[in-house]
Image 1 (tube, each protein chain N blue to C red):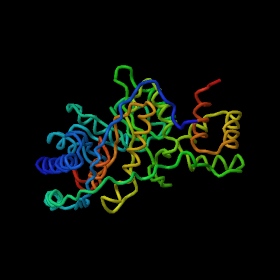
Image 2 (cartoon, rainbow over the protein chains, first blue to last red):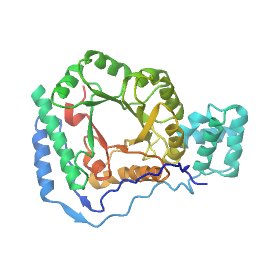
Image 3 (cartoon, each protein chain N blue to C red):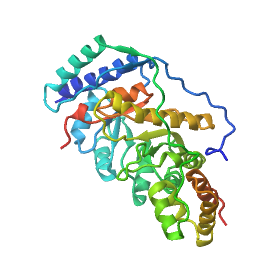
Image 4 (cartoon, chains in turn orange, green):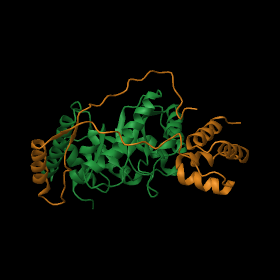
Length: 128
Length: 228
């Protein structure tokens, strides 16, 4: 299952340019000289732009393999859920015991984080 | 004092403008949010007199006190701090934006408490992009599921993502975390969520954030000086 639920509305993806330029950071001071330093630094950097080929994107967390440790008992599962998925855990706490057990069952069947998160939100939305 | 603030505001806006040009972003693509936490209402008023209209606050009561002093000004208030469940009502009632939603429960309360007389509350999901144990925010892995649930809430408008990456020494080291947040937003938009906001970048790293698509940069120190 996809980690995201496709919605019906089409979405135009915002594009960023392919040209990546590397510059040194601006260094801010706390005293009155910092304005002058900013301006000097900005001018210096503007004059020393280095054009580089597009760099590879940094890897996102692998949602396909990002899993909770398997074989946890319920208490350890809840601790791991709290640590790894804090937003999901808050919703999990709102579930009744039966539904928490369903989440635990879902974890036992598939320990992928996205699977667990989806199950919690599904159960939360499916109010009795 | 007003002159100092005007100079600082001009300098920060110039940094943003230069970064937009350098990284081929449209002019005005990155808005400046002045982080006024711990600053006085007088300082906010001075910055407003210099032309700044969007202010970010971390603490509810401090923000409410400033709002009470500044009712004569037309300002856009953004809440950017950690949200306690029992503080959602004043946030829902008094702010235009909330950048720091990190739980569905908080989003549900904000939606339920947003007055019908106001437009939907603009919200961003806070992402713990570097997965630091001490930081607030959603694990990137759970953002998709939570985002879909938040987007369905009637009195909220899910605008995008916010992150505070781990401090990094230089531009090259700052950029990857911002890139990860950008890609995360692209994944969400590809899945059908119309997100137009990346709230990322502060005084020390706004160039790297703008390079990676920031639409809101949250600047405090460079505008107001060191916090009191």
